[in-house]
Image (cartoon, rainbow, N blue to C red; front, side, top):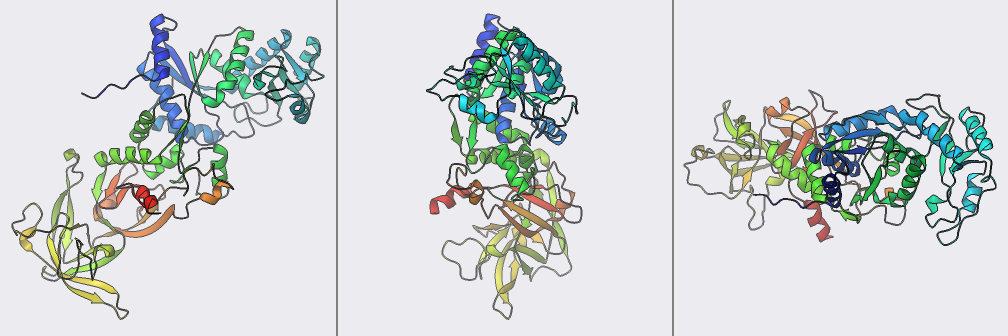
Length: 553
């Protein structure tokens, strides 16, 4: 029996709340800002929020925190919805912070009427100069003591579009000497004359994230508002606003984000990579975006497994990307269909095989899953093998093909190399071999023992394919922690394009299929693939070759 996983700290809190009767059911939310594509870090938050309401009574909302019209687009909204669904989760309600703009405006009016908010005409530089430091109190703005009537008048006029961007803001009136600098009269509304992707031009004032976030949670009766650790200092303002507005008491809990080495997950930096053409787009298979991972061939199961393995904690740490690669290897080993594909071919002529004849050989589609059945391989006098699988003057313990040596062809026969054909430049261009007719796989009565097994394809029926060999996007563990521009540490070998020849059954590949190219790695069909020009992406190698390479260096 598998050992039961111990509860994480959030599960312990929820179980206590349910046991005490504080809640009959729990409500969580996944609240992305639609200003970019989701990445592997978001996957952890998605799995956490939706996973909790799969385990405990309740539901999860998908809420778009769309309070900044300048950076937000419908394209991002649609990509986020696709990613969440692809990961295997369904939300109870699809919501938007912009749904609450009228309510949030009324909340701001209430704070003004309570004497807890004021309109400030100061420039951002003036406000910064009065903010103070962690050890020195701030100083009040000269506009802090405006009357309630004046503040109401100015705020309504802000809403009506009478003032330009940056001319005025609305600030909460809290404490300019507070030890938490976020409580020193934070801005809660600013003027932005910008078209919003949902509300159009109805509004020219927009709530700040800190004002919209907690109030949106409250409107939705969110019981457990789960954020990453950088929001710990914001919790005090979150609670203050809920208390002063006397609304549903949602509560914020924080967990540590998990950073992954050899990558970046900052949306700003990812956008740079896209805009400066270091990658082909948000879904480039080298990107840590969910759409990039999907295009590369990662499965929802592998990403959910990864998020489960890294767990939830209160301390940030760096996760080795090898763990993510382990999760996808483990899943693909179970589900991937096996195919033979030769990348850099050399022709082998089996001289004692009858000319003009051929046969079909049967082989397993996946030895890990008998239900996938068998497929036929075409075999004839001329085949292709990897050039690297032949060596004219091999070292000791070389178990592949060399003059006079024998190897087994996968799911076929044992062959022996009899003659090496070279061109005028002295390069090997063809091998003449003989086969042992009584050594057929599954029916071998030859008594010949060989230690090497090679993959191959039939020369006349092999399908030409393009193969994109992807590797890690960066060549250093933490590109953002190094001196200089993070883009200086891009891995120049993160993509290599090779031509290959595949067994004919590859013609029927579709987007959902996952393949193991024998002795090569795991692959999937790329979105740019066409019926007459198949393109495959390498998802991951068969083994972790990167760690071995780093040890050498």
